[in-house]
Image (cartoon, rainbow, N blue to C red; front, side):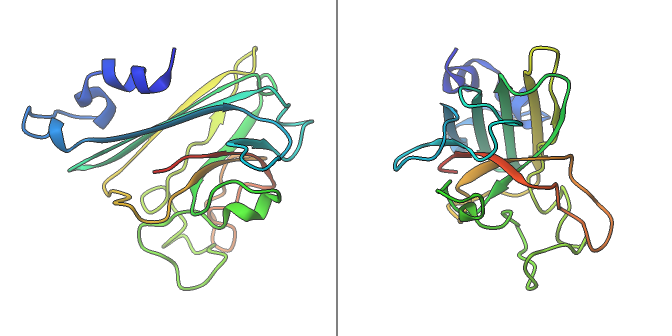
Amino acid sequence: MRYLALAAIVPAAVLLGGTASAAEIPSLRVTSASSEIQPYHPGAEGVTYNQELAPAGAVLSVVGVEAPQGTTVLLTTRGLLPEREYGAHVHVKPCGAAPADSGPHFQDKKDPVQPSVDPAYANPRNEVWLDFTTDRQGNAFAVARVPWRFDGREASSVVIHETHTHTEPGHAGTAGARLACLSVDF
């Protein structure tokens, strides 16, 4: 099933984590992307940087729903390693040839010190964190809701990381190596 179609059939109130009046529905902005990850090539939407932990052919799919009260991002994966923890975050640039090409995490209120490891900025209220654990088949689903919108600001990819996201000072927001990336035009 195409994930844009999924967003169209799931009631807005469910996607947004609350209720939505008919007047709010026209102001929804839905974005989506889905791709098999492959080694980088120009024009690639989905990229693997570590085929041992993010095998080529695995599928990453994202739906973003922006509404007046905030943003909901849904991530599904298919074909990653079974029963394994991964981290995932929205990043500011599209995927590129090198893992760092996607830039830092998107932050609603940008930390003046980069890379951001200050829990005042690197937290799931100021960033989009989509940590997940795969099932026995390597599939997973994650959802994040934040009380703000991207509103056309630089948010251009979802990056899959090696571990769940750390929260302690000096390490907040870190999740190990960048394993894979999906470009998404939020």
